[in-house]
Image (cartoon, rainbow, N blue to C red; front, side):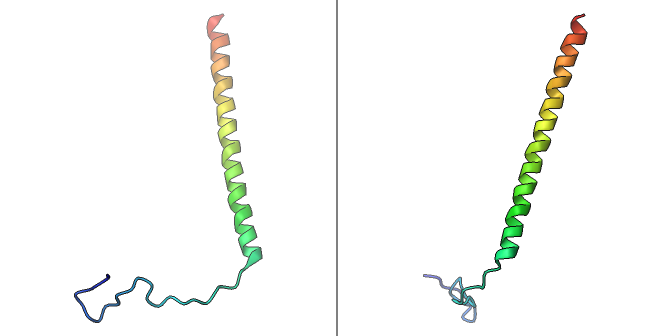
Amino acid sequence: MLRSSNPLEPTTASFGATDIPRKPNYDFERREREKTKAAESAKKAQAKAEKRAAEKGASDADQSGGS
């Protein structure tokens, strides 16, 4: 049971919350999903490019160092 030492303090965690459902904003939600997806794919592409560059640098060093 949630009890407080202060009698004026609310005893429930959801004080002031309403049960009214929110109106969905489908366009905004879709744009946000697309934005996060684009950011994730850009991050993956950057990681792939860095990995490719590192592998190319390592193979170039192996080829030039052995001759």
